[in-house]
Image (cartoon, rainbow, N blue to C red; front, side, top):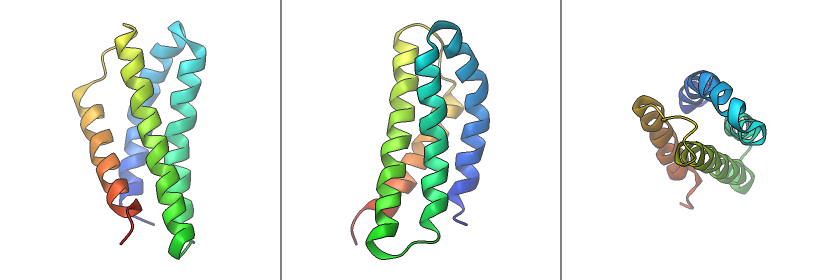
Length: 106
């Protein structure tokens, strides 16, 4: 398993209380954060059993999902539902950068 998957699991744990806060204001947005964050982990985990272009496809999907997660958090913050804690934002940034490096063509 890739080491980044541990960071993704930590992020998912950190997101749980934020998802609950978002759900009080917007259930659909909360579900979106929930689904996209889980999809990051599942696509990264699936990449382990793939090779070549198929592996890169999983990385690209995971990259889209982490960006979606971050976008949903930015939206929730802009709407005044919550403040995203700096440590959550920093970890999401590290995960995004790592997946971007894995997804880019070599």
